[in-house]
View 1 (cartoon, rainbow, N blue to C red):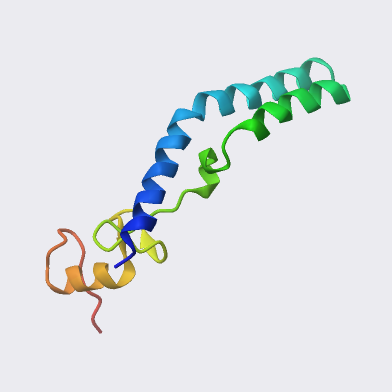
View 2 (view 1 turned 135 degrees about the horizontal axis):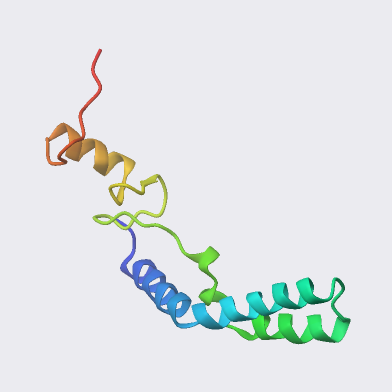
Length: 106
């Protein structure tokens, strides 16, 4: 079981990512539009736009989010389809708690 503080920190990151999503997307679109219009951006324009991106909170970046296990909160070895970590998934499949999942046997 993961620490509750780490799980809460992850939830906070998710809220920040949702809050700043539109600002981040609009500034990135602005960069691509200006690059399409004029092949070379002036240094001042680049600094201004990237300054906006860097002024956003670091935890609002979507790359800082982790997928966590639904039951234990474990950040590694997650299966996206089920939202569970590997060992919990195996226990649930062997107990026949997940519909459609079968154990492999040979």
